[in-house]
Length: 49
Image (cartoon, rainbow, N blue to C red; front, side):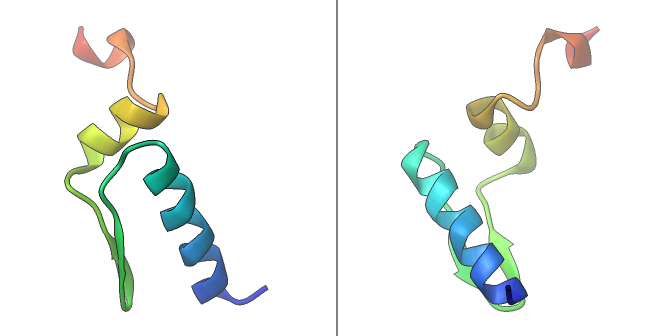
């Protein structure tokens, strides 16, 4: 599978979860890493100690 296809799948997955995301070559543009991780569940209380 090509990387571009992987990025498109990631962008679609994020959009389904309410994250604003665009595929801007050569990278994906997100509102912020922290916001993205909070929405998809990657950042929890353990990082706020």
